[in-house]
Length: 444
Image (cartoon, rainbow, N blue to C red; front, side, top):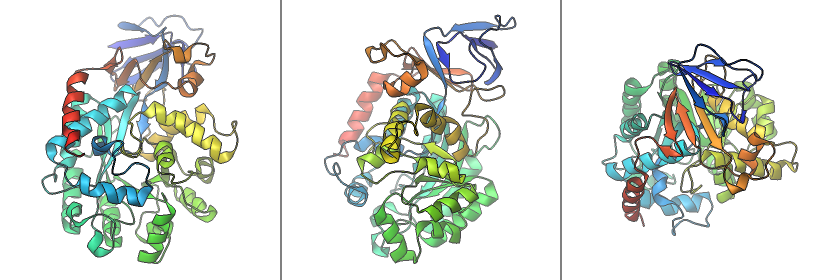
């Protein structure tokens, strides 16, 4: 069926003033502003109340952390003490609580206009060995695209690492399960709904050998690599003390300094390291809200892009963000970026939207999502401007970012409506809230 999404208020696409035609899950045609009605459509959706964006792409999250938002043990702490407070609590995760945490995170993301989400799951207490399978099942049920990263930790407190012994795994177990989930779920074809990446957690929770072996496995399966890097000065100090080098040197030594890699945070890089990352095409996911919450520092987004690194956007975990909202992340990226660069003109709403769409797609190694253009996947987020917060706004696209849009009215993934009238299709929100609330009480 050919569906014309007709005459939006505004659309973030060149030459599509009268909307787009969607067919077989992809964008088939842009309809220019002065064009007559396309004659060969089977159905029309009247978008005259809507502002249309490409579906937003979240390139770093920790879904399970929806269970520990604003937690009394961890609020008002910086990264290392924050993690030390929460690791023993997260060790209580079981399949049922994890499943509802994933479902809630994905539903929140969809409602904010997110159509593709990358989750970094690295926590596998006993009994939760099939966490990646659960994530894939929940994403398929909701109809959202995902890159699920098989994260890992094998350097515990007894070995000089940060996490407690109860949440780490042995290297052989990690690599075997990584190969298992890649074989089961990784689909590298255009239009793929599910991809897998390998994601040793961070320099302070994995060994050098695990990083090296993960890179070899990623090369063999043609998948991406992901990790936290450059998030805090404490991490830099740990890396120097433990490995005798800075984090970017560790990337190079372990085979990670390549266009296959994207990093979370990427704050504490010097000029030479920025140049090296850019030269090798290493992507960076900017997590503005989380960085501000934990006072980690400022990501040099514009400098990274100038050096050649793709820059994407992520909400990060819902315990360091306390939200799973991509439109909120876009707004925060503008505000934090302006503070860092000391200029309101250098970081604009269009920069942040670029990071959340085409930049994020590049981080994930995809050229079929992130833009509204013929042949691209029909992933769209439609927002209305009916709330009081938008009254008086003159630029509709800027208004979504600067006036604080946070909930989409319609969301399409692969040509299918997954949010209709600001409600997720097939999800009972009241029941989900109640079930998740019950699960979260176990983590108090």
